[in-house]
Length: 117
Image (cartoon, helix red, strand yellow):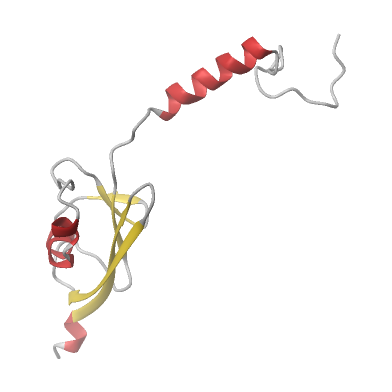
C-alpha cells in the first residue's frame, strides 16, 4: 500500500462569536480525532480549548476523541452553551403572554386569520 493512499484530507473547525477558524490538514487515516486536533495547532492558538470539557463532533454529530475519520470530514470543536435554550424559550413565551402577543388558546403567535371571540 502506498503512503499516499494512507493519507486523507480533513478540516478542524473552531467557531467563536465573532470568527470561525478552519484548519485544513492532510493526515494519516489511522489518526484519531484527538491526534488530528492536536496536530492542527488549534489548541496552541486557542488555549481555552480543553478537550476534557469541550465536546467534539464530525459534521454536527458528537464523536469520541478516539474515533477515526474519513476523507474530507470536518471535525468541529464545540464551545459550552452560554444559556439554556429551553430556558430562553420559556422566558420568551412568558413575555409574549404578558404583552398580549400570545394566542390565548395555543400560547404561540397570534394567528391574524383567526377571529377573536
